[in-house]
Amino acid sequence: MLLLAFDTATPAVTVALHDGRSVLATSTIVDAMRHGELLAPGIATVLREAGADRSDLTGIAVGVGPGPFTGLRVGLVTARTLGHVLDIPVHGVCTLDVLAAAAEVDEGQVGSFLVATDARRKEVYWARYSDRRTRVDGPHVSRPAEVATPDVVVGRGATLYPDAFPNAAGPLDPSAADLARLVATGSVPVLEPVPLYLRRPDVAEPTARKSVLTAR
View 1 (cartoon, rainbow, N blue to C red):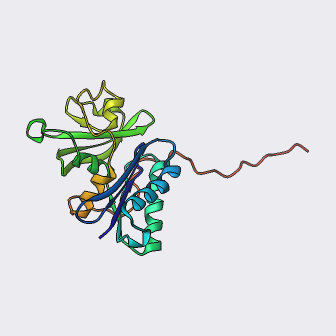
View 2: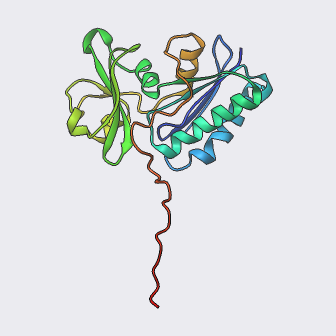
View 3: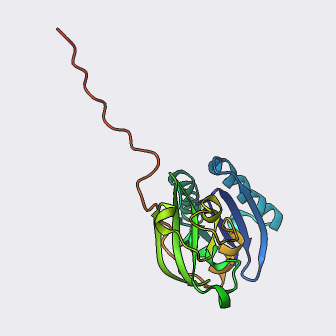
C-alpha cells in the first residue's frame, strides 16, 4: 500500500505519503494565495523523500472541504486527475473531520467542541463534534456571531474571531499526515471526491454580454 494524501481546503497546502503502517514523508506550506503553485512540488517532495514514484501509488486521499472555491478546486482536480491517470481509487474526507481527529483537547473535560476554518467574507466553515471521531452537526457556513460559543473551538477560525470563540485550541490547519493515517486505518467516513463548497463559488461565471444599441 502506498497512499498519497493532500488537502488544499485551508491556507495550508499539506501533502503526505503513507505505506499502510506509518507516514513516510510530509510537506506543508501555509500560503492562502498559492495552492496551484505549491501542490505539485509538495507531491514531488514527498515522493522523492520516500524514494517512490507516482506509479507506485495505490490510492489517494484528498480533503473535500468545506473550503474556498479556488484552493479547494486545486486539490480535487489534482486528486481526480491522478486517480484517473494511474487507475487508483480516490478517497474524499471532510477537512473538518481531519481537524477534529487531531483536536488538542481533553475529551474527558471539554465534552463536545466545534471545528471552525476561515470561509473568508467574514464567515467560518464549522461543525460540532461529540468527540474526535463523531460529527453531530454540520458542516455549515455562518458568520461567527451566529455560532459564538464558550466551548472549545479547534482551527484557524477560532483565532480569527476571538470575540465569538474565546476558547481556541489547536491545530490551526489540517495535516495531510493525519488525513493519511485516518484513511489508511479506516478511522474516518470516506466520501466521493466532490467539493463541499456550501455556497456559491467565489469566482462568478461570466455572463452574456449586454447588447449595445447604437443611434441611427
